[in-house]
Length: 225
Image (cartoon, rainbow, N blue to C red; front, side, top):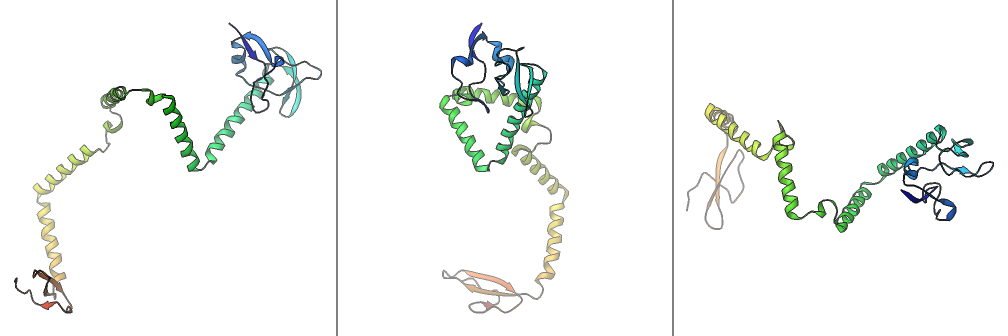
């Protein structure tokens, strides 16, 4: 199928705005696909402008003007080098962005998707629910996500707590721990005396202390009014 194609890209790192008759050609739709829309700088001096693969021209390769074939090995090597450099520059730019800029970029992208009704925003509520069910069933059947072995979920943690509590209760460890705690607490309370006072409603308040407490505390346990 023949289309109106551009010899050089309409916009790239090196050229832009080439919307004119000199930059247009009637060619098969595979014309730009075969070039990957790449552009290697060239000059019109002893050789005319290269239009189709196989033309000989002067290209700027590694900062030197070299006569070679358009679409030949030298041209492709330089084309790939330029493309890879541009990709790497883009990655460096993203990595150097602040966290706020990245978050803002994500918000803008999400908002654009929402306005366009694309992605998950192009689905109805019922479709999203059904997709979720399908994904959940697949994860369960294949043992993925929360269904993977060793993954802790609310249900597994609750079940583990119940089993641990039952084991402690049945083995008598809880009683043994309580007995040991009491034995330790006994010596700590040695030499402590009781004191009491009353609040505004007449309720008794008791407290133990190794040193005498100031008023309104009174020595002894006291009696409930």
